[in-house]
Length: 460
Image (cartoon, rainbow, N blue to C red; front, side):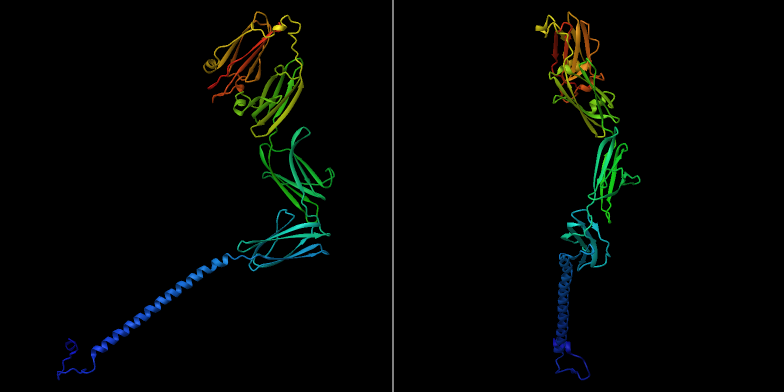
């Protein structure tokens, strides 16, 4: 086979390479080519491995450096003669900001070059012993803090004024009263309503003393933002600010009215914006609690009158407290105390004193539940052989005055639920219970009373 492959025809019929091994020569070439290929392949594998390891190390390096934080170095030196404290801040990173505060007051920022890693500044020394807090933020956002107690006999006033904002009455008007005080001397106060221009009020001799400025302001209507800033008279003025939301609506006005020789006290409540809640307490017990819907059902939520019959209460001293809140959320309360002695002398010297509860005084009414839901009213018929003197009606404990009953022997009272006086006293829906009480006094000094069973009203 090799002979056939290696044979080259010539004139002599013999091979010119005879004896030199042409087959061995070709095998050596193949081996050399294969060796070179393997060497190149190995070099590539090693290169890839080295590149992967180096790349991994490069990515990991920043993560290590980011978790390493260093604090700023802060040095201080007190110069008693000059009345200053010198402060040096240095860092291995760029300093982004420096702030300081005395005794926990509002932090003040130091003006610095934001491209430096070292900064020097001075602060005036406060008097007596004080606490200095310095905060340094570097370019990575890391904050270093430094706290030092500083004592000096040559310091200045560093305590800011105090501000109080209250509502009160001045010359009969509801006002916002601003009071600014300083520990040494006040200089001026500024205030601003909402986005209006700022107003400056300087100290003058009309103020209570040199440490105080008092300003009385009449608030605008509605809800308003008030900003007040006070400055003291130190060489480098200290200041304090006080933002506050002020509701300019007046408080509800509560009045009590009692006529001579009458057993009725009228509670009159007025408000320019309208009432949303009204609570009446008598001798410590809540006798009436009216919500916004109930009040509006009267037809005039800005002016409410509630009559209170004093004869219902056995105490000689009757204490009434009315709390009212308007739709702006501003509330007011007013007490009223009265020593009460009944003016009703109709039973004095009468022949029927021993039988004052007289069943012959008839008080009749239909089924209250049916009447309440079908007719939206309950009729009461009162009759007696003698003349009647007075009829009192109470809806859920609140007195309702009945007129023109004296001298009659037979009278019908229709308690209509849509009446402007009755409707606010009723509880509607959700199974809420109602009751009505009728008290009758006759001219002969006898009396009688009934209380209806509790009933519900689905709607009015």
